Structure formats: C-alpha cells, structure tokens
Image 1 (cartoon, rainbow, N blue to C red):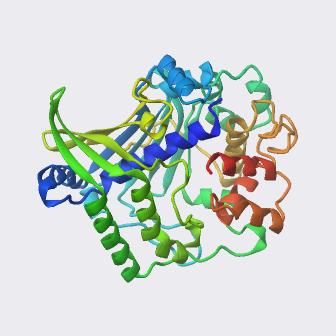
Image 2: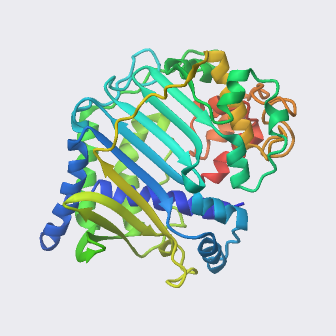
Image 3: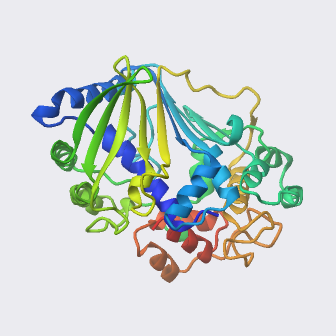
Length: 425
C-alpha cells in the first residue's frame, strides 16, 4: 500500500491547491489583471444555484509507480492502479444562488451545526470507469448512502471472497447497503448513531466565534495572499486561459498557521495547530495552474513532484480539480430503503471495519481482531477507550476528542485509531 509520507503528500497538495486558489482575492499592482481574473472566476461559482468539483490524479499507474521510485517511495502496483482510477467528487445545489445560502448554525444544545435547509449536498468516491465506491447525499433532513465493499477491496487487490461471510449476520437492508444499494435515513440519526454523549457526559456546546475574530482572520488571509501569491497570465492552452499562481511554500504555510492560531484557541475542535510548517513542506516556490473557460473556473492543476526534490521534473504527478458551474441539482435516489439509527450504527461499523481493517476478515488495523469486535462480526463495539488513551490519541493534534470517541463507537480499537492518527501526521 502507499506509504504514509506518500499519502500525506497527496492530501497536503490537494489542500494547498484548493486553498491557494480559492482564497486568491488580489495580487500586487503589476499582477492585478491575472489576479482579478482568478478572483472573478471563483466569485462566479457562488452566483449559480449549483456547484461541483472533482479531484483526481491525472497519471497512469505506471507513471505513479515511476514517481514513487524517483521519490524513494515504493508504491505497489495495486495502490498505483487504485490511485490512478479513484476520483473524489463533491456537489452542492440550492433553490437560490449559493452565495445567498446561510452558513451552518449551531443548535445551541451541543448538537451538530444545522445547515441551510435549502442546501443539498453530495459526496462520491468513484473507481475505474466511474464505478461507485461510496456515496453520501443529503437533501434537507433526509440523507442517503451506499457503499460497495467488494469494489473497494478489489480496487486495492484485496481478497473479497469472504465478503458474504463478513456481512451474513447483518440485516438484509444493511447487506444491500454494503453491496451498492441505496439506504435512506433522517440525517439527525447520524448524530445518535455516533453517540454524541460519549463517555457519559452531555454533548459539548457548539462553539461560537467572536465576529471580530472572524473579521481579523479574513483580513489576515487577504494580507497574506496579497503578499505571498503571484499571478502570471500564460495565455491559451487547449482553448482555456491558463494563469499560474506561485507562492513560497514554507512562508505561506507559516503565515497561514499564524493567522489561524487565534481561531484554534477559540475552537478546540480544530485541534492544536503547530507553530511552524511541517518539515515536509519545501522551502521553495511552488506553482499551480488555474484554467478559465469564458471567465469561469474550469480546473486547477498541481504537480505533486514539486513537493519532493528527489522526484525532479522527469516524473510529474499532476493532481487535477475540475470545477463545474450550474451542474445538475443533487437528487434523491428513487429506490432507497429507509433504515433506523441502530441500522446506521451497524452500517458505519461494518463499513469502517471493512475499509479501515487489515482486510475482510474482521481484524483491526493491527491484525488483532480488536478493531471491530469478534472476527466476522463487523459493527460490534470495540473495548471502550480510557480517558488516558483518549488524552494520548489527541495529544498530537491530528484528532480531537469527539473524533476519537466516535471512531471507538464505530468499532475501532485504540491501536486502530492510533494508526489512523499516524497516517494523518
């Protein structure tokens, strides 16, 4: 499988690409024209009633393997093939321009923030040929989900012959949900299934942020991007306008961390932010390309090879985010079967056990069987975490207490959650 540093590089690059372009509000006087084009293109996304974005690696399996070899990271054939085939898509739609959708508001009783009821959303992970691996949609208070564990396992070269044995004790509805059939449920049931009152205490109140702090953060970001980013109009490429955005990676990361520090102190859920950028962030300029079609945002591309000095220019690994304006509205599937909160707990536990475990044999990430109950019994509770274990798992800032306890509720053991935290560090 892909080693931790390779995974971290991919995630960091994806986040950097979206952040560096999505927040681009202005450039220096000399670069104002190109910067204005980028800013206007992002503004146009909010003027429509729908929006979509699709993240993918624009490289073949052989190219991904070559990149790994050049960077000193062995990427096996199954992982390379999976990475070349997988794409992640998100979509939003509303009955009004997205810029007029109200931000999520806290319920005031510790519950999850309540989104604008007019906003519908979709999250989809797809494999080769667009085959669905996992999908989640929310329309009002109604949510819909489906997963295909066999497809996920096959994508990564896992033996899926034991899938039927793994799911045989689940209700027929849940078996179908793990084999690609839609299920529907009240979105509020997710909170019940996750156990927001973990450890016996009530849910912590939803944090509120001082408006002055929000205004200060916005001003800081604008100032950072104004000084750290540069924009260069590269003319036409394949009928699209191409604008290259360049920034000193380490300086930008350090400046952003400093800007978000006051917010992190007010919102514990953000976790403890580091004082400086991780050592993996290179101390040199990085560039990404923004493509415009008729003034509208078409795509953003970023070459992951820039993050690794060993890879060099001979082994590019382009990451692409394709944007869509006025995409079809998010629709509810017609053939979904309604399930309950207890069903959701079993479904999430089984899905977590299948995807995050060492295979389809019911073992956890550490191969001990502690991640999802007894072998062959997905969805059963793992041994409850002690307060000391929770403190240790949250010490590095990769996860907060609510996340840790939710993973434990879903059947992941202490070691499972520790391994997940390590992947993201």
